[in-house]
Length: 236
Image (tube, rainbow, N blue to C red; front, side):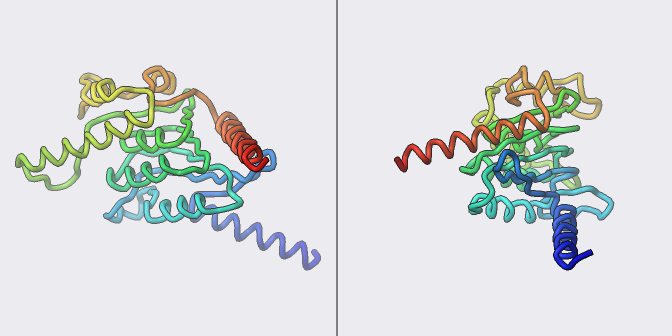
């Protein structure tokens, strides 16, 4: 093996290791660089979860989003979701960043987009979901010791309202309908809420379209193309 080939192999190995550690990778689609970021397992917030938990750390995701928005090379962002939910504050922080990005964004729910995964899914400019995927919508919950005082209930209500307002602003479902899904009884054994499959999530307006990886990449490619055309028109 020649020296140049060894350098290429070494560079590819470094990229593979980086992708494994960060859960992200940049690929080229029709001449455009699109960054793929995965949000899997449980969204970890201020409390470190046990090592056997599969987690996505928000302090890793947020700097990546800032770097993507500032990058001159990356023209689109694909978020792949398979999450059971997690820390509400951390999940909303990531979702708020995604919703304010100028870089074309798309989300794809595979497996599950539960709990705080719902705001994460709707935060992108267009959302897709696989037919076999599911989304669980339920009220805000807290693990561990909880003080049974009015202030605690008020805190839960305010947190819940933040989630409802965000989903209402970034999807086609109304706040009233989303709240009704949260409070539905008879579907979850130990809780109130709703479990939606891919088609139901689209039908009720939470997710934009049924689709897969190629659909999400095609959307991003079209958005990048439209943006470049608009830029050339302004220059002329």
